[in-house]
Image (cartoon, rainbow, N blue to C red; front, side, top):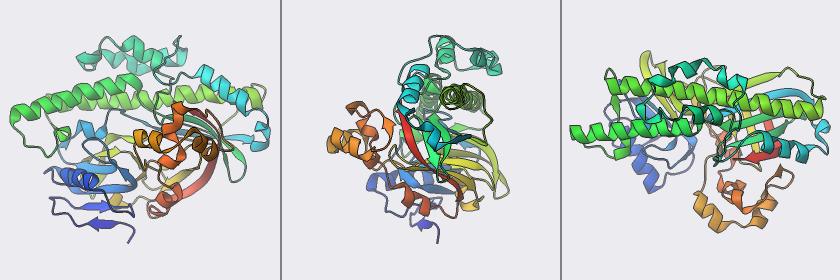
Length: 393
């Protein structure tokens, strides 16, 4: 069996593609979601599943007539972008450090934002909808404009990778920045207040939901789609900048045509049809993998990443994992590992090697090969990438 039907006495079954037992906290979280009356068919857990807020990261939740904003999460539209370039790995020789320093100078990381707003950002058509977003973000339009084309922090990254044919790939991981975070928090608070007023007895306050057809649902769905679009364009703006830097060093500044482009969300919700029913699908740390969908599954900063094509598995709601998944918390990683461990585990990768990125050490993540083995029925591997340069948020 490619997946296991976990023996929970919940309203909906839980199917797991992880080949390990869930911890007590993870089991509780899975049961909480599966006990909600509006969950459709079952809850699907991906191989990289781990603790989240309200719902497990690495879970796919299809719902009828309701949506849980905290299950989507606060980094709305977080996802990956990758392009296959016409360059060969040999062309990178002696240039990686310069490229890394230029990326760090051109693309703001952490809480930083762009000093100037470029044309590609101001021309985005969806700014006209900003006035229709939640009142709680109405003073943030300028900030949202300056943050578009910025990486953010945590596990967000920019990488130059090589595939098994020594072809150069550019890859990055980011979401909807501060604007998506605040929009999510505004709506999560509204959902919690509604639950309180209605006297809803939820298994976890973070599972407060909106019911389809209500004004609150409509407002959230509108803002969610806007933030998801913002996240996608944010990745496009960074990728264009990143590509120009690499072209400057490898093609004398001449623009090149990508051989393949992929841009996919892994924290989001969409209306889809599954088992002949219209449902809302929330992928919390999962990538859509319909037949022939391209997806990106990154490992940690010292291992491998994969470009995949979906197999359209019905039971996973056409989904796959979004990465290796954390093995331990950031705090635990900092307590267990040393700077020497980081240097050793990122050998051969041009990246920062300081205590500021210790929580992102490869050892803090699950083995990506195992994760891939557990989802052979969900995706086929199109390219296997190994990073040679990594910029962390």
